[in-house]
Length: 191
Image (tube, rainbow, N blue to C red):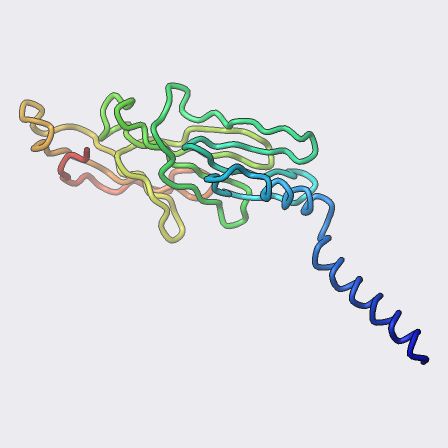
């Protein structure tokens, strides 16, 4: 090869390498552009680059949003119709079909021990949003989601800071179905 043709070969090789790094798929490129255009302070929750979902979920100012990169729409996902104070946690199911959001209702809850936090499930394939349960603490553990829920106050006449409650733990799988409920136990009032 001559010096000039070697130079062209190297240019072509370099162009191919950079274009393969930048252009995964058109959907992935659109989602990446959506991520890059998020407002300052926004947090990415999940991105879906397949042709069926083609969207990005993110939080901004304690609210959840979904950007559909095909229709170029940016909509707030409605959780807790009566409102909530903040988003506590979010996580996906192992195969990423379901997105789980834990919201804290704070003073909007009737009784924090029974309704203080809510677990919401978004089926990202079908677009459905459902309330799975509520309690005073919700967390993801290995292989399950645990909702700790107050059942009854043992001493309602004392000040809230000294109240004792009976509580139970509900274990859910990553489809949102209850696996089992742990027996009752005593707990001090939270919040």
